[in-house]
Image 1 (tube, rainbow, N blue to C red):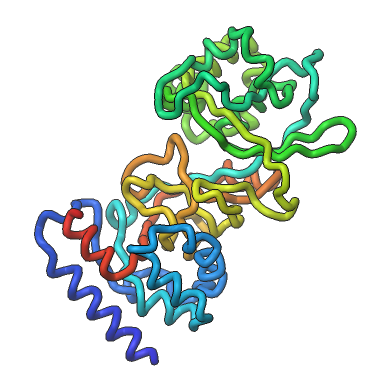
Image 2 (image 1 turned 90 degrees about the horizontal axis):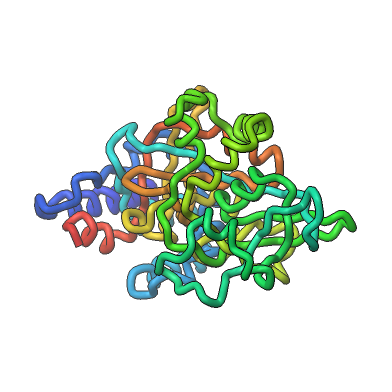
Length: 342
């Protein structure tokens, strides 16, 4: 069986390497033997996560491999027989960050200190079209009927939007779960980058706790920087989501901690298995699945790893900023088309 897997992988590699020179320059076909750590991967867990969303993908591209995934194949054999590895962005050129589902204290009514609103999508917003900026929304007085809850910290408010999902805990113990619903159509201008640009901190010093403490010490300039990002996220309440599930990603399926990855869908198809290899002191070597997107996740080799819910997940996500390799696995015929520039 191992010889058969290698023969199939070699055949696939020969096919994709024979394509025209018009192939995208940031894509490189490689063999499974070239994937660092592949032999020790938890292929079974990756297959389980892949099954969770493959049924929602384009049947013309993914239908055959999804059908095979449901037959209970040997996990490693499944990936090696039916997929072609394609390195994205060049060897060692990927950049990985992390995100998580935060949990913040909230109130149902506006009252000191709860004065930062979390909004549902306004009826006047046309998806994909620019609407009011973050600063304009902060000054708006006609959105009271779209307020889901109120937060007490402007940095909580900003990072809830930056993460795109979260849980709100009220004083009576009720927990409300929120999922991304829409964006106001303006470009994302990250606050951490603006803080570095102004010379307040060096890039390696910036984290959510550092930003939080700095804004508390400098409320006027801090509010100015928070409002400088014109992008704004609107949420929806997830009524019937089991507490044990992760938040829902771009494919509207629950994310799995450390196995779900946000990517640029213009370059990496949603639903594709993706090999993640970081250059951290203790390297992360894992087969994940592209199940989400993000406003700052743009370009070849850009990935954002979902770490779970709560403070510890937030700490781990905040510490994830490493270069490495990104290798997506595509059905063999689709890999051929993509490498041919299609």
